[in-house]
Length: 407
Image (cartoon, rainbow, N blue to C red):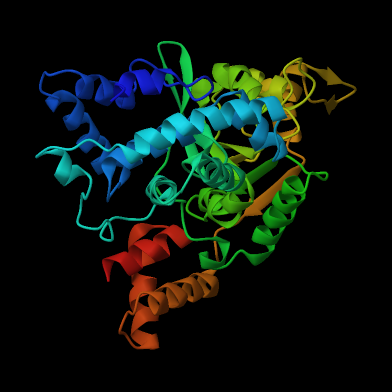
């Protein structure tokens, strides 16, 4: 039988890197030495990603779906590909189907091709589903057609694995870390702030439809659900192609490189700048200003910036900022102050999240109590909720949730 490594390396489009898990597995299978190291890596990956059933198939399915090549990227963008690319991809699928059909055997491998029983105890994710579907394909045409469906629905590469991501910078290289889960289950699960949610939804739906939309600043009191609302958009619209990417203030220098990659993809991206504010001596806001409007590296059409902050103007102001210009007794805003305030003005939509009044706070508590099956009378619930918010010195959705969690 042709060696696993030779089959894998004969692929023209769907190549895998030398340091990939699949290459290590294939190399260990082709050698007489013990494959213990590679199998340990496979088990660790299965545990981390929630794989079940045939782990060999899961490893192959992940390598296929994560593969970003001219064929998969062209299909992701246009739902169709050049005939020459398709013929080359079909030749590759013959090799990959052979790899699917020749699962390794042995005392250890027999356990790994039925890992976790029949796999029903493991959460069904995109990789385990794809592995099962590809294993049932009769020929390479079906194999490619099945892969098409997943690329069409999920895309390919990193963006196919989750709806939410976090930026990571290691040794100067920018990468995205998929975040488990999709935030909360959707905006409908967030209690209150209906007018604010409607403004956010209208802008986001317009953005997804390719129509006019704005960058958004959500500002107001702490614990009022600003960040949660943006995270909920991923759960609400992830299946429609929305991806939410969290990026922190100290990573703003990486934004141009990130935007260059995002511009090539079919998805619609929200860059989430959570809890954003700048102190007087911090100048990272200048990078953000250039990206949002007027700079050479303006955000592409498929990217919008959503920021949350407890401070409306984002950059800390001092009275000394106003003192450098006086004319005829009138105090005019100085150039320093204008530069600081111009960042907030680049957010075309600004949504205010005030702290709830006492009745609104009690309504949030009552709704959360009902959802969590709290068995207390309405009067007793109100009494305890009121005492809780007094002891904690704040009244917000976060305080209400902490109170319910304590019960």
